Image (tube, rainbow, N blue to C red; front, side, top):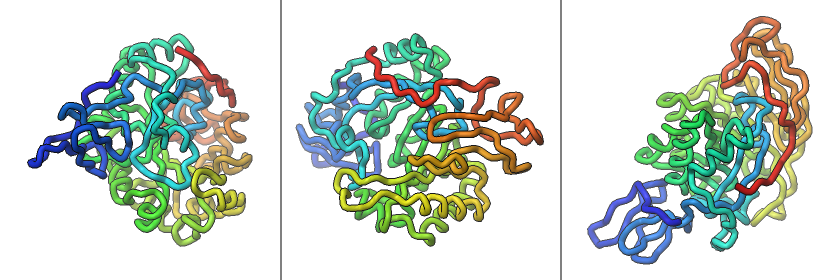
Length: 353
């Protein structure tokens, strides 16, 4: 069910220019943007994947990853096709790089998705698998329906969006995980086919202009973006521009897509990165895609006691009271918490609406 897209204008030469992401694709009749899902049809920009999904699944919220947002609960996750970046290491490449719309097997309008989430007792819906920025209209409409039913929404995104579009997009999101893929322009240009500054601008916008709870993920690729200096620079920037309370996840790379010749990230690299981040004053630093209970768990910055024990997506001890207070010293943990945590565990359950 294609729909008329937002965030575009007609150019002097009769083409259409998309203003959704920093690529600013200019399209002639019939032409598609880099993302492949926004197309000039009859001199109008159309989102061709509106209402069409690559599938729905109940996931643990920790998989997004979000560690300070409704811990232990399930979220109804879905994506569409296409992407506005060209990461050579993409781990969802069969979805995000897909130009075969036959993969979009599930059709669901925004209201049906919200109703299904309530029926399935999911606390939130996650727009994920591919970047929701490119299906912003579908994500926003779904988020509006979710709010009517008291269901929260999560954007799992690379943050590659224009100032024009991000205000409306994040107005309807309750949480986000932003993938900060590297911390050099060279990495973004050569490996991700994009630019660093728009992502940094999105992070600052989220911190200073919204109430969206957000966390940052940094996938560490051996030899590409995992040097101690780049890690230190990234952590220092977060401390200086976002503050110490934005959670940072260092996650392990595994060979995929066009980087099959790169080895998996050593555990030692993740642990060293976490130590660097802590030394820069960041309070909540996590390791992901590995079994590391120390690095996966949440620790109180004040009394240093264990607050939320995790191993991968499984929770153990839970030492918060009154929603988000340290049981030992009363320190207030930033994030969005319920009085009682969920018990969804590590289950991944595909569903059909």
